[in-house]
Image (spheres, rainbow, N blue to C red):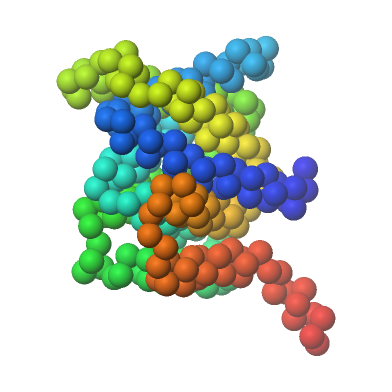
Length: 289
């Protein structure tokens, strides 16, 4: 698969992830426990993909470490993100999640000694400016915004691990394995929350929960695994960060969240970060000279 096709796959993933914020918001507003929501959505996703791809799910010992690590980090990322949505707006969470682009090249270097291209640094700077404009600055950050930033770090690590292990483990095994691990972790934590999975599911619209489990989870994480296998992880993270733009757009369109000038300007900076990372400046310089 070419990098361009992989990038298109990641663009599609970002759009559906942005739309997924709506489902998450609806479920949380209905009173669903964040841990139960994470567990339910990924068990639905994992079981569904297991049924569809059961012939490819013969795990060997060397296939286990990747899905285990990725699943743990995925759980931590979604738990912090879901909790954050209880303390700040959907728009803020969706935008702040996009700051994972700051940490992806850093983690890539720290764990796998991958070089950091100068244009990635420019993209990171533009992303940070966008987040600054969105939140109004550090002094105005709400508790939920800080929690969302922690979640963004986990999502950055998740992208780096996916990019690494998708080249070592079958992408279907990696996708299904991480979802099962994430769902099981949520079940193990459940007794400490004082709620039951069945009781939490009965609170909400089951069709919304199934949709969140099938589209933003099962489909999107499968597409993410495919895309990151064939493209650069730093560029992939920039593309995936546009879920913030789509999340804000859908929140304004369907949840009646306010649309402000700062959201527009901040979103423009984030989108510019994507464009900068997509441009091949080496070819451009050759044409000029």
